Amino acid sequence: MKKYLISLSIFFGILFFGLIGPTDSYAFSADTSVELIAQADSDQGQVDPAIAEIHADEEVHHSAPAWLVIPFVTLLLMIATGPLFYEHFWHHNYPKVAIGFSLLVVLYYLFVLDNVHAPVHALAEYIQFISLLTCLFVASGGILIEIDKKATPLANVSLLLIGAVVSNLIGTTGASMLLIRPFIRLNKGNIQAYHVVFFILMVSNVGGSLTPIGDPPLFLGFLKGVPFFWTIEHNWPAWALALALLALVFYFLDRKFGKANEDEYTEEIIYTNKFTLIGVKNFGWLAIIIAAVFLDPNVIEGVPAIVYDGQKFSFLREIIMLSVAFFSYKFADKRAIKGNEFNFEPIREVAFIFVGIFGTMMPALELVGNFAKSPEGAEMITVNTLYWGTGTLSAVLDNAPTYLNFLAAAMASEGANINSIAEVREFADNSMNDTDTTFQLAAIAIASVFFGAMTYIGNGPNFMVKSIAEQSGVKMPSFFGYIIRFTLPILLPILFLVWLVFFAFV
Figure 1 (tube, helix red, strand yellow):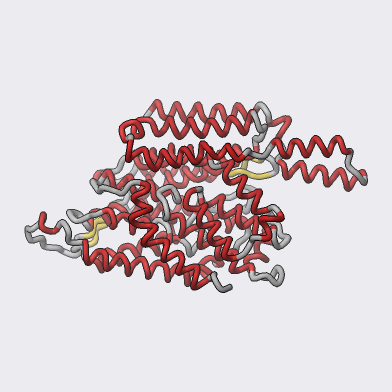
Figure 2 (cartoon, rainbow, N blue to C red):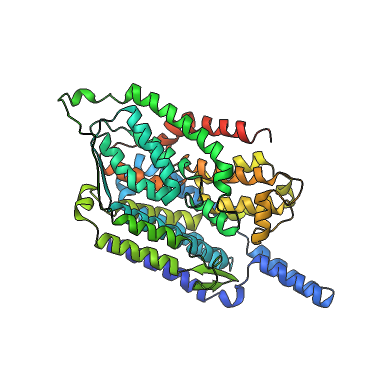
């Protein structure tokens, strides 16, 4: 573990070294250079052609070439094929691979493109992402839920639906970490891959689409100005339809295959139907985590922040969260820790895999964002393209920046600015112009959350649930197996039906 922490330290050290170096000359982004030109035009009546050419060169210089997405694509392929074809190498070297690819892209941005803006934002988003996942993972690991009940299809469906509701209160990560172990224990002796896959679909993803707390993209939308209760008001019909269909499919699958291993357990078991909860005090730690989430310096004045490039980056929130993780583990009920067979391997795997993803996905997000905001891309902005575009990229990119990119593009097509809270509220309330912007925002919100279940890397909790299940002895499908066996034949038709019912004919 020590050598991996050293690797991460070197990674962040190089990044900060890059920040110190080129920041003086290139602290502004391409958007800032455009604003400077506009200001010069206003003050002097015209712009010196030489200056304009320099700024134009800088703006091009800041843009990532298309070939720079190769490290991202290569990393995704290795994540997919490593556990399948070269398991020993991958298991022992995936942290080095992830950090290596990430460093390749980050160094190119810093020292070739002279672009500090994108790596800083990627670093900030990663720290926010991993801090939240870590503290929810650790705090929920100190809560032991035991259900002494027979694992019937109805009992399983009920637990999945309860988890889907809870995910809106403590986030998909919190609900996943809180309930995956009880769900596995409930099906002890009969747990199969499809049980865990449907848990990922319903609890770790689709369930958390009703509140900004539920999933990171919705929370970012709230911070940008989308009203808190907008999500439950506009997302609940699609949420209810998708969950009902998933629950129905799971119920019949469980009835057919749920007793496949029952012959191995022929002894009569007497169930008490008791519900036992150990580690109740950790719910208090979870409450502190959820409260800390709202300590955003861009929303609440006076919250300490790091100011860079005109934007405020939180650090108090992350300090509180990581402190909560430490104390919740230190003072956790040891019976709960032991009963959950708690260890840090799942969060370790997520931390390293997503270092690679956050570092290498910058060019892909930049290319998509630039196209979406271009005149050609703006012409293609419709509810349908927003739903499928946001969804497709949310399956393989982090869904939070994907959400923001498509929201920015949709607003730009209406002459609005995502950095204006008032304009975001107008966009959400459909009071901006004649275009039905409410459906555009709903399409982006639903797609970013729902499609996160399409792959293991679509959402942070997916990987953690998979890792916990494998540690519990469940043989989980590979990256491609998950897609081919489950999400393409089961989830994709449901997503198509959601589109058909709510967005296709808007």
